[in-house]
Image (cartoon, rainbow, N blue to C red):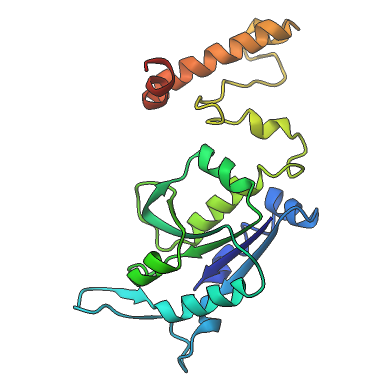
Length: 229
């Protein structure tokens, strides 16, 4: 998979992609993540990529021209299934959406900044808008990193234990059950006996019950979706 991220602050994305799972995915050749500085596509002498909004108002707006130049340049070399804009009013990122995007071959992610982008970018250059939550960040870079991580970790071979991703929270619209490790008894705090019983069938049953219980308690919206409809 290839993911191209367009941003005005590429330095914000140096850390997330140079460690842990995302780093290993790139080293294995399973994912290629390229970060593009939007200012490199500005025709302005001062490399500006924003301007005042027509009609007035506070804040600057990302201009359409450098964004179009960057996307067009990338499309001359690769075919992209989605051109994604990280926006607080986009489709909410869910595990299901990450699953869908993880089987794509090439993606472009545009990290918004300032007071957003020229509306013509959203109307004509973008195929999907995604939000990571109902709050506003200083820019879309961190949101782009979150989306990238949620996608890349699902690519077969990225995780050492490929079954790990399948048992993550929200894969089946349930929150993951409690997990424990050694020692079985720590200062009187004991691991549930079923987990050390060796009875795999009963352990799986216990885990499912705890997932349902935890989902009902912490995410009643998900519980209602799965068990009350």
